[in-house]
Amino acid sequence: MNPDHQYAFASDNTAGICPEAWAALQAANSGFLPSYGSDAITQRACEAFRNFFQTPCEVFFVFNGTAANALALASLCQSYHSVICADSAHVETDECGAPEFFSNGSKLILARAEHGRMLPSELRRLSTQRRDLHFPPPRVVSLSQSTELGTVYHPQALVEICDQAHELGMKVHMDGARFFNALAALNVEPAEMTWRAGVDVLCCGGTKLGMAVTEAVVFFDPQLAREFEYRCKQAGQLCSKMRFISAQWLSLLEDGSWRRHATHGNAMAKLLASGLASLPGVSLSQTVEANAVFVQWPEGLKQGLLSRGWRFYDFIGGASRMMCSWATPEAAVHGLLADARELLALSPA
Image (cartoon, rainbow, N blue to C red; front, top):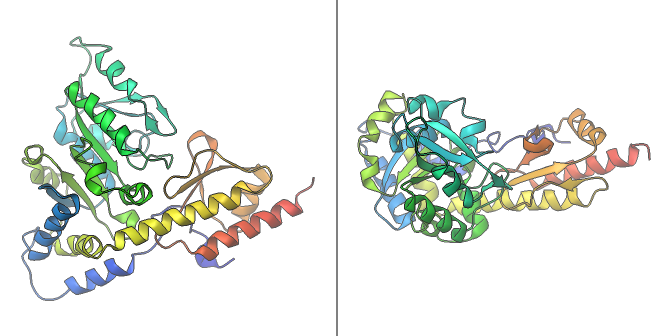
């Protein structure tokens, strides 16, 4: 095994910066420009988002996904409100209470989900089960696209959830840490998966796509963005040299390289899943729809792969999660599968 490949499946955060983002950083590193987002590069990047989504929208750049999600949710809630999310949602399982912290206490209410996707019927149940003063009224529905289990919401499913949410007086937030992988998998227009479906606010993932230290918060309703810049500043998320994080977005959106990188990650996941599913005693616990593979396998095989340097995580439901990224080499997929076959051949019958 090439030692450079050992972290290829641990996370799509383990990959480096993609060439387009690296070149954009270098190009932005020239001369003197206004700070805190007043520069021409940042203004062009915001306009690139408006062109990408084919609608006027307000765009803010922050450093990481935790801040993007927490600040976006806080902007939609009062402290005495609640947010409905899937029971496996990242904002519930992996944000260390940041949504509650930045909203000054808005409660997360967990909805039942199937394969990571929230059941639409849960919205009415959870939003109407109590209406008394002692319970925080739901004001936001938070969806992950793709989900924490690597599945995707098709546009019609999004429309159904968003329509119900709006009918019940709630806004819709989308955690899009892997938004581009879902978009490439569905092969639809960005607008169809966001504002046309009814999404009010999107946290758009740049880091997992191959950028360095940048996520975007996109408000499709400009009224919801009022004073959001103050939240960013107060939370330490206002970048003084904004051109360096916005330039990456400008590059990947304008030249379309986002699609190539997301498509590659998805393709490597499908190749890996196909190979793993053909092995005796190995099964997939989720259908591979984006760039995540969830696998159930014999403990001996799992430990054998770990001992050979392969890296992946135990995840929700006891499966092992393997992520593919813009940079996952096809050789790494074949290398892991070759090691798996060899380990199975060496194991006692």
